[in-house]
Image (cartoon, helix red, strand yellow):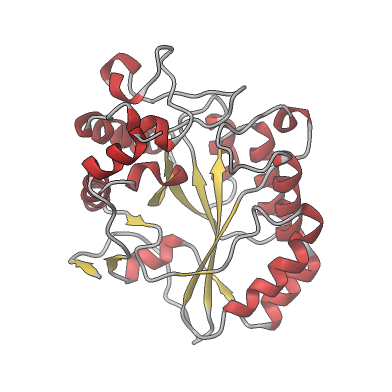
Length: 297
């Protein structure tokens, strides 16, 4: 693995025990009202240590207000280059005519990563938009400790990956998954009625005093989210039920008790980036190869 020879600035205290450390990261905060309300509930009643916020949607300000009420939760920017919901489309923070290779004729992001790369996104426009998203989060008053990427688009090519690393160094923030985190299996595609039992079983993968990451997607099973259709074929058809069930897991007394019984210490990225160096966990494919694959029928 490539060692990035710097440590991002930040605050936070080192772990005081040899307990396994777990980052519970809730993604897509700001996506819509339902996600925001589910996150608010989890922050108040459940377990979460890191929140990854999308800044490209109309519900950003509500998300910012909730996040500011919970400074104990570290905040990351969920860098976005695609918009996968048929009925609810978002576009770039940058004026769309300044990043034309990233948007459709209506100024919105393409629905999938494949569609994005079939239009040959320009590296200069990607770099401009990613910085604009971080800058907006900072202008909104959020204390950003890390970045990650929505559906892998912002790190899908080696050139994009190198730009993300450059941006992280420039802003003195971390990149999620660059600290040797071991992944706890997600339950996003597990049937809603089985999510809690599976989530409890997945805690068996936490076997030593290392650093672990669990990525969650919360929401509400109400009209707003029920109306949304994922343009990606692999997305669950009853998305609202899945996200509601995932929020229920994080608020479940049984899940919280299982974490406590195992001695698992919840940590956020704010503490991690203050103390640990980043290592590139994988090398993405080259741009031309990704574009070629996207153009294949």
